Image 1 (cartoon, rainbow, N blue to C red):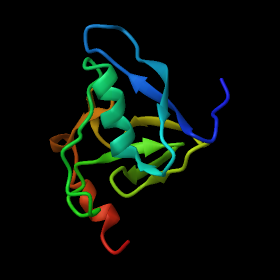
Image 2 (tube, rainbow, N blue to C red):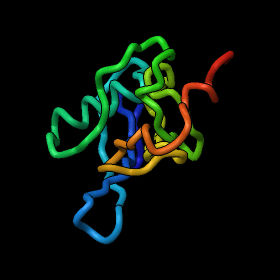
Image 3 (tube, rainbow, N blue to C red):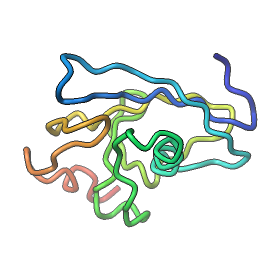
Length: 119
């Protein structure tokens, strides 16, 4: 499915603890302006309430509660922008234990915020 200039194509990782394996699900988010990855996930959650994601963040790139993996790179989702016409793959952050969909347990490893200090 090709993304058009007024939409963003998002492939998100889905995982339910009672199932053996995760899978990817495609969404098209309509937007004429760039959106943060967190805003994209919030819009997906609006149309599919069963989709688990963190949407309450500082939106300043400081708290680290928005850590996700976008196109193979671990990033801060609140400050990572996606432009209309682009396609992205969003997965859980690679350094933490997966809970559900793109939500991870930050207590399962050292503070992830340290890897983003100074950026």
